[in-house]
Length: 146
Image (tube, rainbow, N blue to C red; front, side):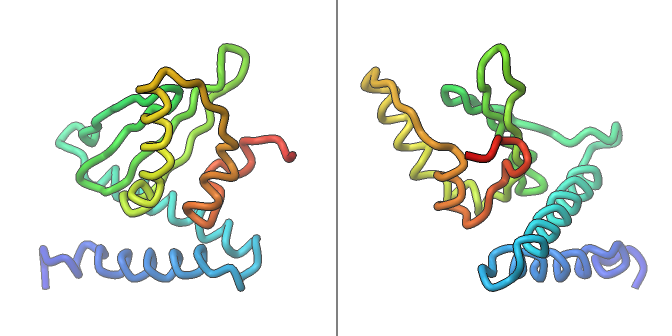
């Protein structure tokens, strides 16, 4: 059927994305396979972002900040990039996560917001926090091993 959702491949892409998320989130799968699934999910997110853009090819983006965290959301796609400023001498960490993953990260960001509101400083292990809440490390290969 011309012009339908099936015609543009979106239904097939949704199915592939579902399968990749299942692989990525399965602790019984090898680390390599799980990382490959995450890599492919990030490529799908980029593809969706490119498709959702206006006539200029540039998707609408909204940006918010919380301390060293900078969030850029592409509403039409349901993906969010998270950039963490690590100071003048280090490049920022960058991850692309889904809207569902942002919801799972909300307790971490609320914890940080509460401390900031009280004027308390806080140190967190970003890799450990994201691993615990998401079940995978969206910053892999960007942090030195402990």
